[in-house]
Image (cartoon, rainbow, N blue to C red; front, top):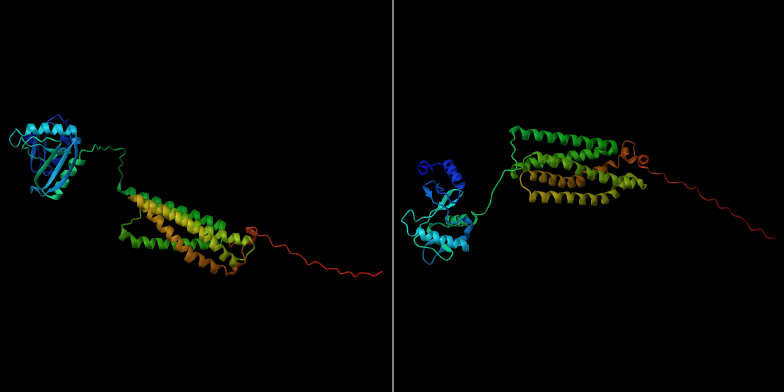
Length: 364
């Protein structure tokens, strides 16, 4: 009755039959479909488990002219079981002399047995192509792996959730940028204009490159990518701060602005290069070893780190060189961020000339 009711015409019906067959006990007879839906079977109890197959591989038989065949090697227990079952099948007529190779409740092959097979090995032949022989060999070798899957966590999200997360990420980025701007203006005053201009140039370059590379590499601005851009704000601002502090240190040592800009640059340059190299290395490793959305974070972080070097070398440093010639910055205006008094520079002590008193030796 089950055999008559079995439907193998569609993938859905074959999948349902396969689930029912796979869930049965090895000692129970079942009905099953062939994997391509061309036949249906009544299968007896399992004679040889998949774990009894030691190895199976596709071989081209040039000596006997059988073409591509599949050679199977069994374990010691598996060889005994296979010899026993083939001995029983060899005495029967077709189709009862066939055994079914079953994977996930579907019959992938149904060889006929002509004689008892001893020795722990067997050969399956019958018009195989190279691909079909390799597929069957892989199924026999690896289909018996004891793999099982269970759902540890399952979350259902709506289509609008991604847009909401992206909007929240952009808001967080705007808040972070606003805090950086407030800090720069409060602490560096006029120098904050240099930092903000550099941040603007970096943002324009980042947006342009993302727009150009997006279609080429399949990059999309998602939430992890926004997080990478937010982290890059701090990395970029840190480079400006390093340079500004080097200039201030030179001013504290008593130098004027123009020499301070030039002397502070080599020391700041080394620090910026080392810091950006570490950040880029971390982004590159993260991009290589991860997949999916995390790569968006790594890509954005690495891109903005490279652009930070470009902006600092080609924009921030030349801009500071030009501003050092301006009276507002060169003379240390209180709102320039380079006020010597605010930086704690002490005026040099003036020493008067020593008066030289000459005395004449009186002679007695």
